[in-house]
Amino acid sequence: MIIHGHLVKGNDVDSETRCHHYHSEIDRIAIKFYCCNTYYPCFSCHDEFGCESPQVWPISQFDQKAILCGSCGHELTIEDYLSCNSTCPSCKSSFNPGCSLHKHLYFEV
Image (tube, rainbow, N blue to C red; front, side, top):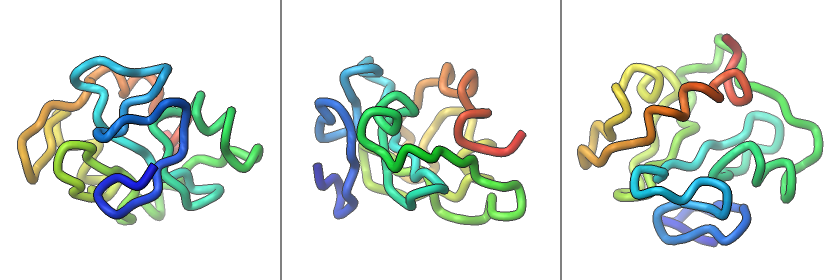
């Protein structure tokens, strides 16, 4: 699905990047996977529709834009996302703070 001009692949992706796996009101980000340079709502969607070779973003590239706010389309760098306190710096929409439990699936920790 094209969301704010970006292709977001996944299972039943809605207009704010929610998917079949994560679909609460605050599940509104997509993460660009380092391995395939493509946005997915979650690691499960990448497992289903991705490149089959998941790789995490190395710390040396945390300055890259890799997080898409599903509410406004703002792209955050990984550094910005990890320090944003689960709030979009552009539109102030809330992100799911529980996503931090999965950061090791996306980012070098």
